[in-house]
Image (cartoon, rainbow, N blue to C red; front, side, top):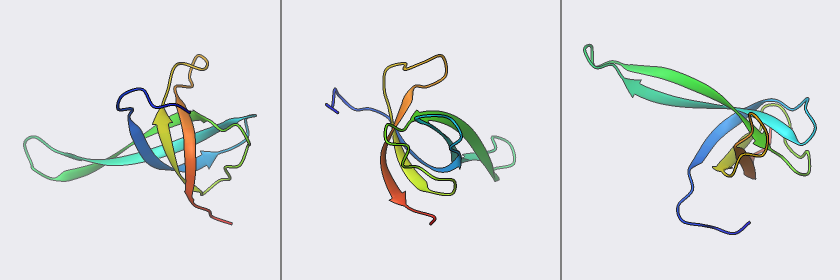
Length: 85
């Protein structure tokens, strides 16, 4: 994959691998509340393209932003950081 400028990367955990060549990755982040100054955990789910179907549920993966591959897919799995199995 060629690099064009700085692409966004996220690290998350695979929560679903039931689709063909697609993994659903849950990414957690901390957001500071504007009034109470308490950190709140927020999460988002991204559909990421997994060409070899290598991701399994519970794997920690690195995903990178790419062009739209389908209606919902805008991320690709770059590497599996930590395997659950």
